[in-house]
Structures are given as C-alpha cells and as structure tokens.
Image 1 (tube, rainbow, N blue to C red):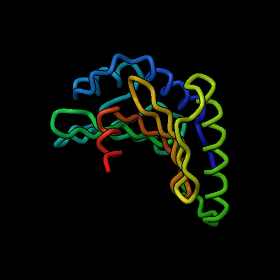
Image 2: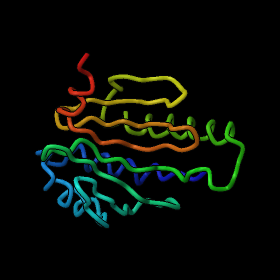
Image 3: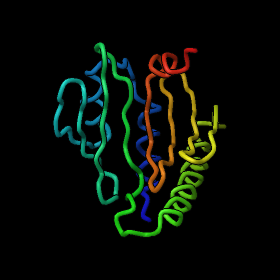
Length: 155
C-alpha cells in the first residue's frame, strides 16, 4: 500500500496556518494555496483533485447552510491490488500511526484517539479540527470546522 505522508503533512500544515472563516469561499482559497484543482461544485459538495502522490488523489469538501463542514482527502491508495483485507487493514493502521506521529510533531499531542475498527486520531486547534482516519483498507485526513465538530459532539 502506498501512502503520501509527506504530502498529507504539508496539507495539514497549510490548513493549520490558513485563515479559515469556514464560509464556502474558503474552499477555492484553500485549494489555490494547496495547489489543488476544483473539478465541480454541486449543491454544496466540492469535488477536488489534490496533488498527493497516490492513485486516486480525489478530495471532497462539504458545505451546509453556507458553512463549510469539512474537507476530506485520502492519503493512501485503496486496496486496488486485491490484497487480503486483513493485510491492507494492517498496512492502513501502520500508515495511520506514521502520519499521526508526524502530525503530532507540529499539532501537539492528539486531543482524542479511537481504536480500530475505523481507528481515528484527532487534534483540536482554535482554527480547525484535524482527523487522521483508517477506514478498513485505506487512510484519509479530514479537516473540520470547529463549529461542525461542536455540533457533532452535542449529546
């Protein structure tokens, strides 16, 4: 399984330094900063092509009620070679650990961690929430608005 940990780290660093308003106008501004291309915008869902060095460098951004909820992008290839699921799952978990260690170097200790299946490591900053997630046989990053995360955390 191939991962672009350096590329993902670069994007998260850019996101941590970005001047977020969490309005939909942030999507084109962030994409320009990151060197990404917006492919379409259909009813609040942006389809984006990243410059990450993986097979399918496609990303999405989601808005609702004139606010950006989150941007998600894969950092690994999915299991397209037909490897056994257990093997791909273990590789995705290893990559999650590697990217989490790298992100912790500048985001600090994670705010929360959730075990497999669907392991997740989360960092809360004043500007954004960063999640590194393992979903079965691949890994991804989510950049969330603090407002959206607060809504998710409501009882």
